[in-house]
Length: 432
Image (cartoon, rainbow, N blue to C red; front, side, top):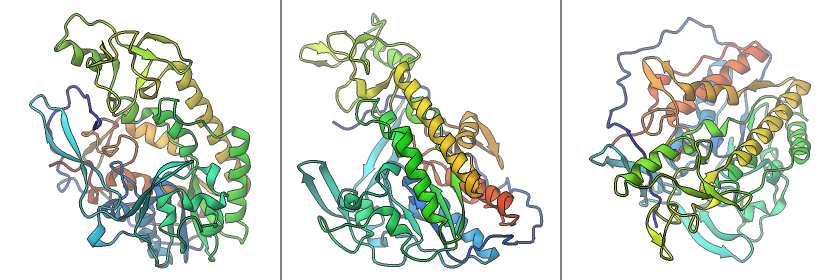
């Protein structure tokens, strides 16, 4: 069953025209300060790769924050920057979500792009399950963003056999890949780096309702983060790191709420006054406003539709599964681990003299709502401009905001004067 997006009161509105709202720029003389940007590399996961709308595709890659950052670095001595782009013929890469229309009540109709993909093979590993491999990339690389990678996996030699986004960058084919990610990104000399790793070490726990993954142990995270930064700075390179965002402030956890679900159900069953969930502890109870439902909710069953003779979610005999909801105890786990991981990131950065982007505070601030050069930016699903259609990853405009945060952190730490990105050049969610 395809995911069902249950969203209330989303109006059919066009993105604000930004052509008439030109930003004002101060005259700045570009300077590299104390840093050397001649070979910049970007280390990270999906946010570094330009992943958006639930997939990796060419337009997203072209609008990644490292692409923007590298472009601005060229004004202060930055060299060529190569991203492992999909070809034009396979521009849709892994496939992605797209907004195709709205219902009569204003709810978005979201479908999946399935043409011009770069899928080479799909196999099932007896241990790890379904795996997808993509068309190999063989050129130079500066953007090493690998969607899905955890900090926990950066030293695992076999990981290139299990992650198709990493596998497409490696010369061998499964099961012959034996190059660990950290060794791969440091194999060639570089002078400056950005590193945004660690998000997936807690994000996958959160997005699966605490049921499909476990957080990386805090001590393990600390040891691996120290090892990664140690290797990246080992030859004298300078760099910038970013903290882990507040994942619970994203649309993925704030769009499908209990009031929205109840209102939807009551449209056809007015007497319903409660929904029932299975908690992470295995108990069944009525849902409360403190529970966070994930987006999308519904691939395992539609609320109210009988399964086994009992309406799904409307009876304690057939509750909404734990994987679709974060209960308060699981929310506390997410907040605790994010806090601990970010303390490690800041501590290691301070010890190594690196620039730091506080992505936690940055995206939380913009999620709450801001006006940027005449455009409203918030965490509102579809209309907020900041987050793409998967509710987790950013739009091109969101990545431009992040790129400027990286630039400001670098300029502050290394007394450089890299010009900022013109955010008005980048779109929010693409409307049909």
